[in-house]
Length: 385
Image (cartoon, rainbow, N blue to C red; front, side, top):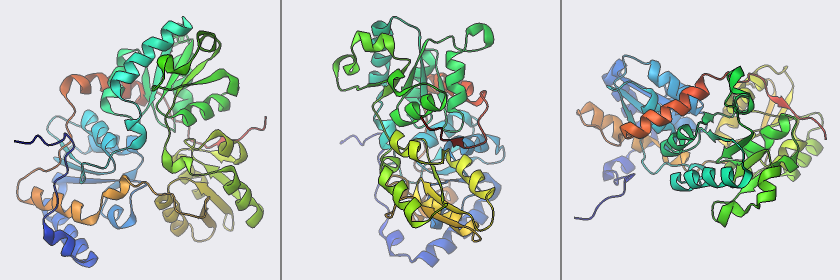
């Protein structure tokens, strides 16, 4: 018998693709009512509107995972996001709760850029090269196994909201409650690591990129000794699509516009923007804006579209002229959501996301270290060099 991949997504029965959008919406609403409080649907900010309308909660990946853990009555947690998010929800939820991902191939390209064996080898290499204590700080946008490797090396996870405070913890002396690190290894997004280091007052020369495809990451011993931050060569393709030219065009076309970008954007873009911030920080900034204010936002299109509709008294537009969509998130659609709910109504669980116990325990340590460190509420203002 042919063995199916771990994240195998079976084809949907044909009748789902034959249903119209109104039929799908009516059927999903009916299933939600039937399943009641035993069901909790989570929708990430980047999810398409037709799906997120059915979410009981919306937010970023960490907020949703924490909300999932707080839903004591919900036996089934349907996570309309991507795989690493569902893993975090499984790690933080109760043992009797089941986390379900509507499409098992909804992954994350950036998370897949940091394979666990490579992460473990890389941490050992930079320690050997630099001769210093290196603390790994792994973005929550990573696999559970990578999070577990981070915990084993004494590090912590971070979100784009609290990464600056996690970096500060990593470099603080153990006597002050920190990790006592001399250097930080930021995994897997080089842009988040670089932008955070600069926001903390460090220089670009304090950062060096580690390429897992090259021996010793392509780093010489002298570079390793000089660097304060090692940056994994990874990125989010959605946020990397924004360019300095997009910032210049927005300012030319809309004088006085405020440009805010996600810290996953390249440093050249962040340096030209007025500020950078996580999805939650961006949402708060626009909500606090004055009527008539103008905003150009460098992050995923679905979030920007929702902000524009929510704040009709001000101009909110995407920084780029073409859409910036997460193709992985887009795999979650109404047919797959209904298919999951139909099976639950029949007493069957499809697409459960279960992290092996030992990995979950270690990954939970890295997540709990992250959760214990306060998030920054405000956007980070750009400081000119």
